[in-house]
Image (tube, rainbow, N blue to C red; front, side, top):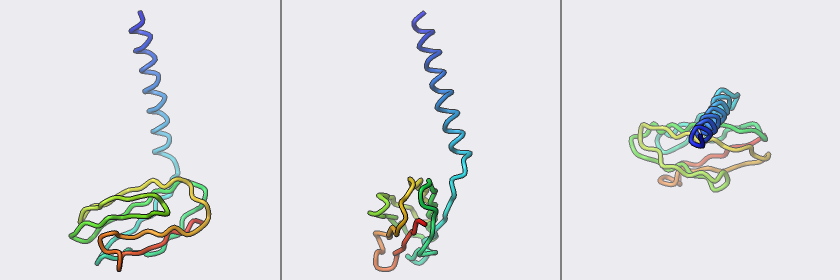
Length: 115
């Protein structure tokens, strides 16, 4: 009897969390794209809405890897050549947030502005 109760509770938890995840995935999270080409970001300045989640997709068009990093956004990820990285950014306060490519920091620089 106890195992049935746990099974039903487990199923309810899966259905509840699954439904929440589906609703979130179907939500209106704006997507912003950056590309890395010739060890530079394009665009090197993007504006996003303040106070809401945003998704940032970084496509590396170079043949070599690049590490997308931002101390301001608290993100860091190596993106292989020809691959992409996706970041879900929590709601930001208004302001500027710098990002850079750690492997080519002299040329791969950018700013995300939350407005």
